[in-house]
Length: 299
Image (cartoon, rainbow, N blue to C red; front, side, top):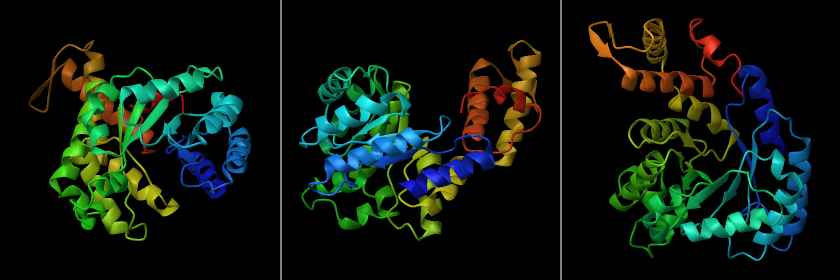
């Protein structure tokens, strides 16, 4: 956890913005019987983090005995310093309401909630969950999802390539991405466990971003962060084109314009603005004409 926070600080200095979140893990990170001590460590690390850092915590699942203690000790003490709370194994909007109630009990009514969907039933309720006003992002839990099928999905569907092939896994990914976009939430793609295979990671990240509609992705190793940022970032040509089109629209008070033989109006302006926003969020160097749009943007 300390190494991740240090890397985040170094990359903030490099890019001039916080380009990835650090999620301090209680679910898999805390030793059995040591949940309270681990939560106390998380509180200490969050308290020491820079005010510009984006630090989150993944608490235990709702049915774990440590869930309420995690919320009380972590959100209760440093909830206002957290970028979000990640809750695993959410099955329904009713589960989200239980999280909201737990946070309200410690006077944390504004901290965003990110949820992890890991079962067929959870995926079935994806649109209902995404519609919840406190949910900011939905992540897909690939390995638990595959395991929940009792061997009906082969193990290779948990790999970097197989997860984009098996129909049930593909359907789950698309359902989550679609539900998030329907309600203006952030779809976050699952991990690639082959953390030393950079080529496999890049391929998976590009598929997640370009074909499956995901706008964020989890990493499980520091070496995965830069390849993920590169895969999710627009390329230089896209950034340059978007800058020119936004500039043309601005000069014409957002009326329709002709640019290189194509008509652009408010619909395409929104799209190309999103290209520039994604470039900024992934630490790309923006053309001088686009930089003023983000000079005062919060990091």
